[in-house]
Image (cartoon, rainbow, N blue to C red):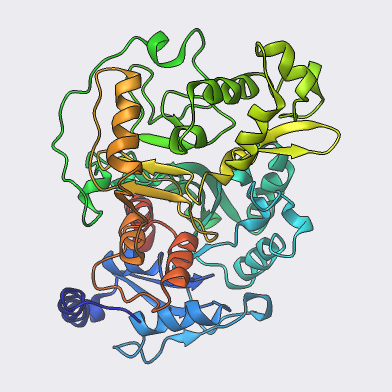
Length: 461
């Protein structure tokens, strides 16, 4: 496990605080699908005592135990596989928590839901609730669970929990709203046992906190950006006649984006194409842009991106020669698909270019959602400005791309994006550590959510 000296000091202080407060634990909890401890950290900060944890992934278990075991917790149980759990040896359990494996409900997981073995772990979770009757529970899952395509599955989960004797609420919460510069939407399902229905009525999901961090507040080695008024633009200068759909809440239609996307199949004001990076003539750029603007038109095929034949391109580009297309093939910008025509080598939106999909500027409000599958997103080491779209893009290419003045996030920074403390010891394999942080819950969201739950006073009954 990796741990720095500052982290060791912080953890010693945490241990001393735990010794002083151990006899005054406010509540007990069991940590299901514990991962590396994203639920546990904030719950212990709020005075909780963990009675046991369930996790089957061996590397995650090693990290969890290295951070939480061996100190003042002789009675805590390692519960193992949830599919084999029955009645737990704990009476009057206060709180049951867990981030139920989410891949079955995610877009990346093809949203197979209960048809995926991982989706069936929800049924095991409900069974554990039924057998142990905690006073309350908090469960986390991906945004995909509230997708209309999964409506019946979500209803089944909620209805099943209610049949077990619980009042249940759910809501989508974003990590950014709780002080972390990460765009991470997750659904949280909170339930109170029926004999605590008055407390359930008092419960409200937490409101966003006032504290907001920028990426450069937590990322090492980047230019520290002082907040200043951003230049205002007319949306038509940034987007033309139509503002594209799908822009998220962090993208102001009057401001330049705080990130650049590396993609040959889209053409936004901060899109970087392979022909922007590779040395090309103005004529070659014209050919590429013509393919970009026409590849999705149905007259050229039924796909959402069709190869264009030489004949079709000849009607669009004056005096086009096949040798011009061959040069772009040799530069690995285009490729020829037999009997169909020419398409971009980088023909998938999310594939990026040369292993990069997005580069965020240090002053960005957010980084993309951390996931177990990793990220192709980077962070620029310094900011970029521009008085217009062309200048902004040129400055980015010259100062960031050509100089390779960008970095990937480190495991420590991934932990910060999830709100993990400095003392936390992550796995020595950096790729595995980042995967584990991607699987974790954002600790600040849990702390605010659990605080709202505790404020109902259900523990005093």
